Image 1 (cartoon, rainbow, N blue to C red):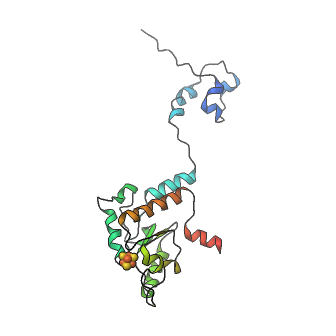
Image 2: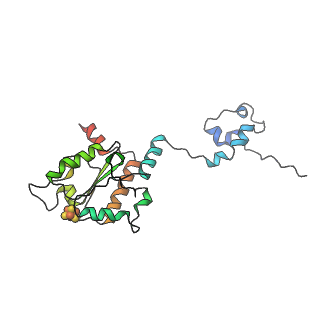
Image 3: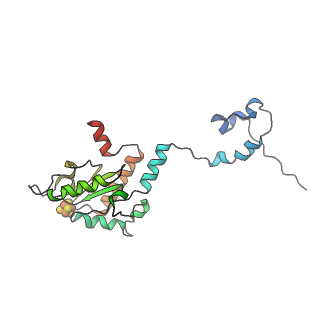
Amino acid sequence: MAVARRKQLPVISDRPLAKAGLKSERVLWPTKGPGAFEREVENVEDALLLTTVEKAIAWAQTGSMWPDTFGLACCAIEMMSIVSSRYDIARFGMERFSSSPRQADLLIISGRVSHKMAGPTRQVYDQMLEPKWVIAMGACASSAGMFNNYAVLQGVDKIMPVDIYVPGCPPRPEALMEGIVRLHEKIKAGVPPAYAMREVAG
Ligand code: SF4
């Protein structure tokens, strides 16, 4: 019966775990054969994935960001279509629009904000737990667009910090998707939410 030959491990100085600071008996005795622990972990070295807690949290946040169910005007129709099969926001784990602000991470301001709606809009924002993000979708949410009058708030950033502005009247769903992807990139790059940056700036 053939006896399986024990795999020859490279010398200790070439072992990745040794380079990472692992101290075993072979460090003290390089000519000694591999120990039981080293035989167990020799394949693990090829399968290990190292990251930081911050990167892992950012990855989880961008992979399950739930938008709040909130629409104000014509832009909301474009926003609703991002859950359709054509745009498929489920690719990012975002198809679940939450009816409760307490279970939402993202507020998409889709439409003009009248002064009458400014209070309820801010209340929805306040009820969201941190961390939370805001996208101003369209010209009206960003700057009131064509509604330069006394009845409409001249940009939603008058009442809450905004992370991403999406231009257009209305922006196509592709533009909103672009804004969402840009927001994900900001989070993965370690950029804090807009409210946190506003607090730092005073
Ligand atoms: S930006 Fe255009 S489409 Fe969007 S709410 Fe204003 S008027 Fe309507």
